Amino acid sequence: MSTFNILVVDDEPGIRSGTKRILQNFKVDYPFMDEQIDFEVDEAESAEAALEMINHKVPDIILLDNKLPGMQGVELLEIIRKNNIDTLVVMITSYASLELAVKATRDGAFDFIPKPFTPQELRSSLENITKQLFLKRMTQKLNTEGKQIRFQFLSVLSHELKAPLNAIEGYIRIIRDKQLGDKVETYQDMLDRSLERIKGMRTLIMDLLDLTRIESGKGVKEYKKVCLNEIAQTAIDTMRPYAIQKDLNLYLNSSEKCCLQADLNEMQIIINNLISNAVKYNKEGGRVDCTIKSDKGIITIIVADTGIGIPAEDHEIIFQDFVRVKSPETRNISGSGLGLSIVRQLVGLYHGTIDLKSTPGEGSIFTVTFPKNL
Amino acid sequence: MTKKTILIVDDDPDYLFQLKLKVQQFGFEVITADSQQEAERMLDFVKPDLAILDLMMETEDSGFILSFKIKRKYPDLPVIIATGVTAETGINFSSNSEGDKNWIKADLFLDKGIRTDQLHKEINKLLKI
Ligand SMILES: Nc1ncnc2c1ncn2[C@@H]1O[C@H](COP(=O)(O)OP(=O)(O)OP(=O)(O)O)[C@@H](O)[C@H]1O
Ligand SMILES: [Mg+2]
Image 1: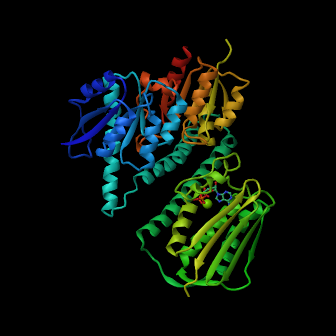
Image 2: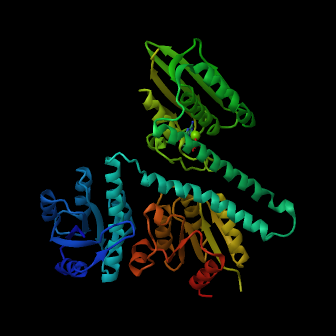
Image 3: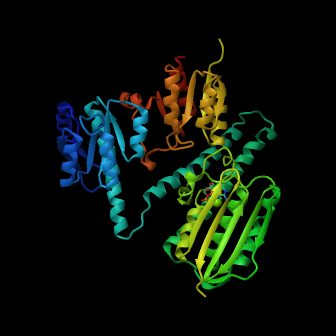
């Protein structure tokens, strides 16, 4: 049996004592957990009092009212977040405003319990929260033990795999049941869309394979002298058929051979991804310029396009797993959102840097540098 | 009797198409939007009888925000939020409790994998047919 410590912060004594009573004999168990969890409840009647208690001992879960006499709940939430205090905050609020809810969630609140709540509502909320917290602790523990379990990653991944599967399954059912009549031509678009979604899944799987190889740090890596000009030329040749469809011109500018000690495959992944993005996110009749140069011990790869560009607020996040810019321009372009995350990891392996400059509507410039190691 | 109109908002073009087809086969008029933004513009000049919203569109809570705005404009318009996210993302909306409805303002949460006849039933219930 282990015990989670809960701190209820509310100026209404009724809520505090009610919570205490409701959770007194409440226990949570979960197939994964070897043990049951029960709760110990402390109370504070203001955010100030709560802060004092937190400084003393960090509770596992805080049930936080927003409307408090002095400092407000969201302000306390902000302090907790700024100081990286390891606790899970759940807002209790009768001010059932969505804006507040959304803001508080952005600021790190984990969940909401609307007030007034029934004992059953409080218990089922806490059951969920406890499971989450348990899983989070477990992942943290495994991570520190060196076992890389990427819980978040896996959950997003399953979502990314499910969406195309559902789409394809839906189309197959429509076609099987001949829902739109007997003419084969009627179903042409659905077949094309299914193939498109399958293509998307395939890229995702390819990207995943790249990622696993990078992360396991082994596989068939072979360090030797590789010349980036040649890799870029091959990448451009591979993309040319796609570029022609969009009436794009692709150029490679490099006056000298730029080589380094590296794994050929990894360098290909970096350059292919950048060039493929520059083509994918380009506009009809646009161009892609790939420049490779070497100067004072630094090798630089620049991939510049005249495409749709990337809004400033997305410059950081597109390097994260699965993040894609959602806009009318990107809607019909398929991708898994893993490409740049892979590129960034690989660049890091070679002690390089990656930088992005972009103007929406005009184009983007990705610049990668590597210290020369030959 | 005139056909009831249902607004469907989803950023996955395939899901949007398939759901539209289903709902049309139930005998409703369907209008669609593929983003929160487009839906908001549409709602300025049409009032559907029911709305089905995807949760994650431009941002991961677009569906909530849209639902909130719809309810502010047309408090009596029933809203369904359809989610593909369930247990595995840690976001759990299984409880369709009164309390949740209060702050989220949607009338019903449905899993996107819901069976067709079930969906039909839920829509009819909300439309009181
Ligand atoms: N050259 C570019 N111009 C405009 N947007 C870009 C460009 N490169 C990347 N992006 C944006 O950044 C997002 C992330 O790119 P990333 O390469 O990681 O994924 P992807 O292209 O969507 O999928 P894939 O894993 O198949 O490469 C893209 O979805 C796109 O919105
Ligand atoms: Mg890409």
